[in-house]
Length: 140
Image: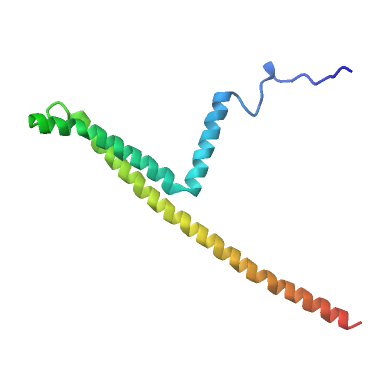
């Protein structure tokens, strides 16, 4: 039994949803990072900050060893600047992670309080409906 199918109207038959595998992977990775940052901000931002802090400390060892062995840091100005910048960025990311985690915890508490309020409102409505049906049933 032969199977017929519609020929694509687009040039080359390319998909409109996924333009390429690499583009799809990049978009999916961005979505995963956004989701992780939304629900676990301290682990994402704190981990990134810790990595930058560690990298800055490692690069900072270059002028430190030069100072210990030779008594000066001549020729290591770039290492000092990069190390200082990385350490400061790492500290900022850690602080932002702590702040984002507090905001996330506050959001979860607000969602839970709203859920509890809605649960308390539902039985009242059901009691009204039951009272109305009982009153209507007794009048017959």
